[in-house]
Image (cartoon, rainbow, N blue to C red; front, top):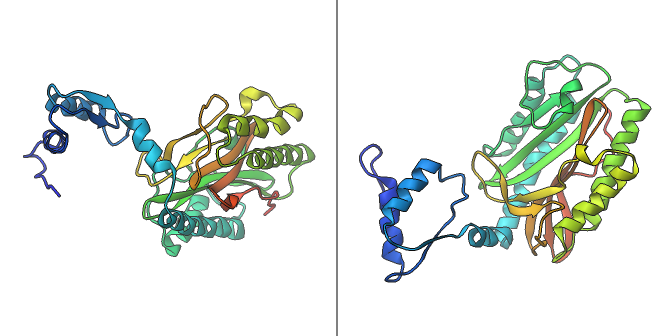
Length: 297
């Protein structure tokens, strides 16, 4: 363990010295250049401190270690998922007409904190009514009205491991068109999940997820990616290196953790469904959120 005095010592130089000490004479040093923990200016100083040593990008190697979870890591994610479920349960039980988006987010966050959750790598995304038509939106003082949707995305966190959960709820009975759009989104999530297998193609899973939406006449340009890997994380993101998109060359590792979701814009609203999943020898398991029937509050 090495410590440094902030404002006096030079952290990039200290880390470079430690790396050089541990590398064999003339050996190559690998760095995870894509990490958010290494801002551009710091990266330049670190590279300069490494001098003439050969340096390669080891991001893929580091991410490959993070993808497959140990039994203890999976237990951490299960605990995080219980926190997330507490947040969703309180939102469904206490959301009322006239509440602001900030108050709705507070229902989720207070329940998760009381259950034991740590702070997440990203904020609680919350929108109601017409604001659900956008993507990630932080909560505002916009109030919830009868007959409007609530769209949320948030994470329970334990030992920095995240269980990300997202749902679209309705305050009062939706119209027939809104219910059809929700049902298509639900069918999409279920179809994609059925295609997730150990060693299976991430791209094929997304294609399977998109089929029900395209069959319902939803424009492909209004459909978001099917998912991404999630691991131990700090701000500004909870994503890890597992790319679950139609252009991905990745396959699903054993004992991996991920977000699987369907997000599609239909008319003025976006419909978002999904949750935290793990893939083990027993198959795909949803830990929080997931393919829930439309909840009318």
